Length: 391
Image 1: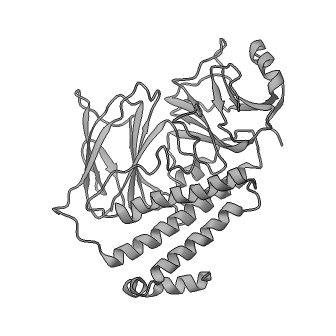
Image 2: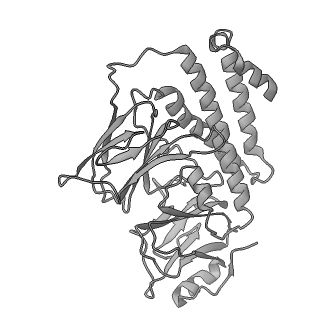
Image 3: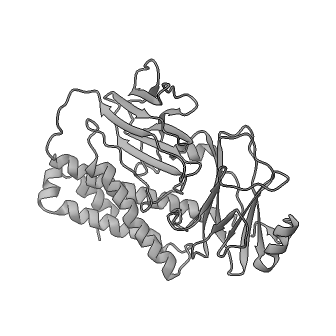
């Protein structure tokens, strides 16, 4: 396998030379091998289930990387695609989100047209970097539900440019390279997403044929994105192991740098439960907010399979206690509580709580309890059993 120095030297060769003698593909495969070593890091649970999910995770992230860097890479002809969906998952993807993304360039202007639908919220974030460039997705502009002007018939139009525009304007900078759209459900079964389309305002009729040099650059970028994404979130999962089964708030600046929604306060952790244990998460009260949610993920920060399992609870689906508290139970089996989240066959993983547009930050508390104590605790309305967090 090539050393880092050899890889850097190879990538300085002319693109056509690397393409024609096959070095491009050799370099790509060598980088995949190197990324694969992240799956066997010493702090990661070493069992066949976690290992298999880890290698599957690599294929999923790579699939998303191909979309943005090789399949839909022309900023003159932007295509809205889903970077995360029911099968492609990374970075604590949200079961309540319908994500869309496309390549942009600060050199051009764009128009987004859409109809609002009935979905709870929608936001638009332009980005000036990607995870293959130092593990960041730096924001270059933001527009969301609070500032979006919608016509009485539900339609709207957004101009995307580096120069300020009247009406709905989504800023870019010269560094802008992508657009991320977040649509947030309260109840997926009842809400309709916003229908969106985007066009570049530069006068071009059809895309150019495949440019060999651009394909070489795209394949290199796809491998870099895979490398940066996997390393970033493996590092995060390792950091979370310092406070298992607790939910401290994440540093807002860290969230901003990786493309987090500026309206959301994020609380991240690692969870691990024995077969006879459950994790109880509580909010003392629900603050004035647009939304909140708690989700369980696997070790790789992938949402669990929400197509077939209940893996999160949010403001629209949570049942409150008589005193206004919210109590959510994470357990392998249903304890008979309305706010139960399944672990879906996992013994450990990561945990993510979001508080969106909140007037105050309410810190969630956590307790690990024995299942034998859980029913009594839920009946009594007391969370005194168990220990908060677990070192």
